Amino acid sequence: PLLVSTALKIKSWNNAEGVRVVAVSSGAHKSATIHWADPFNPLNKNGSLLKSSYGQSKLAQIMHMRELQSRIQKTLEEKRSEKKVDAGGIASIKCFSVTPGAVWTNIIPRTNIIIKSLIWVVMRSPLIGAQVIKMACID
Image (tube, rainbow, N blue to C red; front, side, top):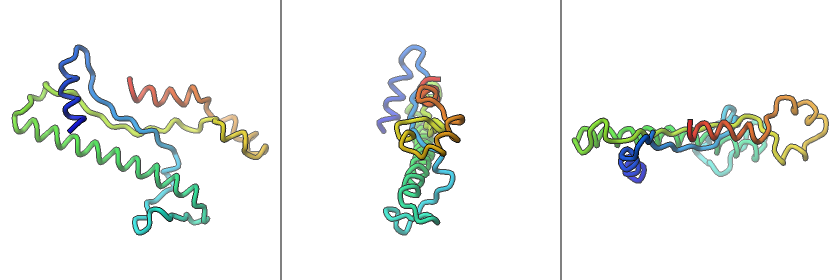
C-alpha cells in the first residue's frame, strides 16, 4: 500500500518517472539454493556455512524482489479495474535486484597474495561498482 500511494502522489509531480525499489545483490546467488527445511542451517556441498548462507540470502533477496514486483503489479491492476485510478494516473513502480560485480573492497587485502595477484585484473573499483547501483536508481 505504501508504494502504491507513493506512486499516486509522484505521478502528480512534474516529470516524475515513477518509484524504484533497488536491492543490492551478488553473483553468489548463482550457485545457491534455498534450504526450505532448515534455512538457518544451510551447508553447501563443501560444508561451507558462510558461503552458502550468503548465497542463499542473496537468492532470497532476488526472489523477494520478483514477488514484490508481482504483487505491486497485481495491486495496480486491481486499482485500475476498480476505476479508482485511470491508466495514466499512477506512476510506474519497478523493482530491481542488481549486482555491482566483483568489487575490490576492504575484504580483498586479507586474501592470499597469490589469489590477489590473479583476481585484481577482473575486479572493479568501488566507484565503478557503485555506478551499477546508481544506474538502477536513476537511469
